[in-house]
Length: 134
Image (tube, rainbow, N blue to C red; front, side):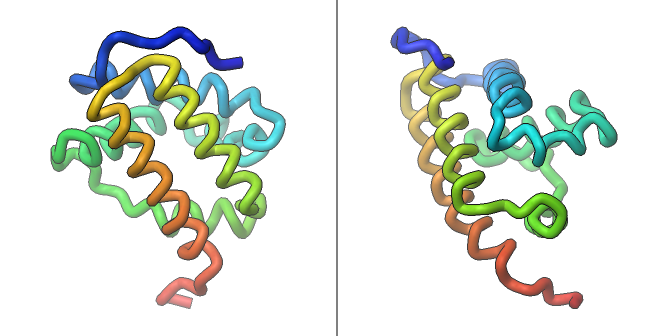
């Protein structure tokens, strides 16, 4: 699964974020709990998706303004189609934290983990609520 070696470096730039995101998706796309949810990437394109996800995490960690999306409607659609259960959210968080720990250690790595936990809690509430448009 995920290496237990202790990394010596923190997330420091976009290249690190891209490496983290790509490695996470390598895990998620083969995970029995998450792979069915991520199968849509075969249609929309993994590389394009990774760029958007990288923009999102770059904004979270380094306060850039590249990310222009709104992830709640996307996750509501995924929930309607695949059922984003608490178990799937927990597994996503487990894989994300494990991947961060596999590759990085430091302030930004810790922030990536804490922000992911907050995001999971927010998304769990958000996908359950009806959208404002109907």
